[in-house]
Image (cartoon, rainbow, N blue to C red; front, side):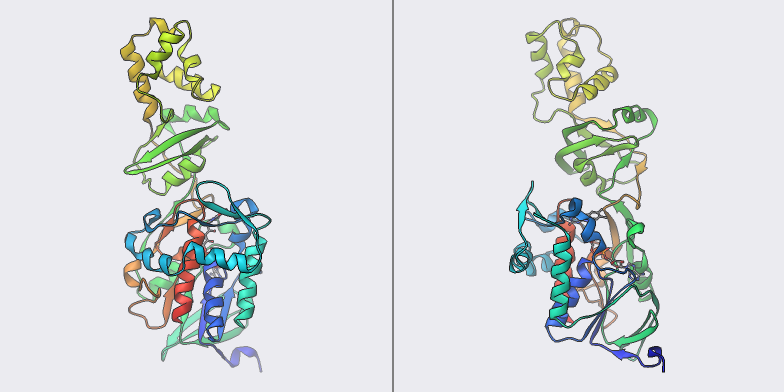
Length: 396
Ligand code: FDA
């Protein structure tokens, strides 16, 4: 008889073997739950493998709920405090994985992201988790308090089903919007998904800045109340670099962003430059604070020619003010193909913040990036995957 005729029974079925799904499966398995982890990819944790330039920025020492975006910001607090960055670091240490802090609290493996995937795999093995890899999910039924999942050429059943299939960013890594389709089927709402941690594109007059492709500078990027002091990078399509990726999560179509090109400079700095070097041009004065190509491009746009000595102090103060809040009007983002994460997703008001269980569908859970919780750049999104996976794993 074909295996499909005889459903295998589990206590929990987890869909998606990314960071969140593997953590959840390992925790549930080690609590004695018969657990099945299904993924259509041939190997688990593909986003982990390519993350952090192959070294996986697995958490951040600055994890705090206000560093996550959500329509309901307090939602993440419970899971993040119950399974913290320190808890994950302890797990990494138990597995003998060497790590270091790079910058801004970001923790990376010394050697390879493969170690994190191997660690989670080992934890799943310790919990006796069955892994069904390379198996497409053909169908899901829900009847008599059981979820029946048709995957590959098998059928499996369980009273609990966890949606851990992530968001649709970087489809070439197997990412899909499956989580949203499934959640909608069970009556959960979706906060409109949008690319986040993504380069912004420039059009109109700003298009001239594309000629600076490859130039990078430390800036403060702002959008609304959000501000990030990190590097910005000009690209052949627009703007990238950590400051821009961070601000992109807060940016909405039609809004401007402002960039302080000369962070920390006194409003009178160009007037002082005039006193010190009256024969210098504005571009030369700017190049004391900025890469030469950027200094040249900004000086051209400020349209203040000749020696500094011939420029009125007021014009120099105005120029300094403009440089401290240079406005760009992005015309879009580079989209889901380039977005490190998808913001939005399964609305948190339908989920328990303690267990990630759907309030109205007993036995259904959602974790990780599929949920409307999106972290800053720098290890925040993996910490959400670990914390939300752990919270559901404790409840299964
Ligand atoms: P994730 O997407 O990891 O896993 C979902 C799983 O579900 C996948 O294995 C997929 O194959 C499977 N799946 C999807 N649809 C399916 C279907 N229909 N049927 C069956 N299986 C299906 N974050 C961070 O904190 N530090 C970092 O250094 C980085 N770096 C980074 C680099 C790049 C290039 C990207 C794209 C992203 C990052 N991130 C990151 C973000 C981080 O990778 C992301 O937030 C987590 O992987 C989310 O974990 P999940 O388990 O929720 O989803």
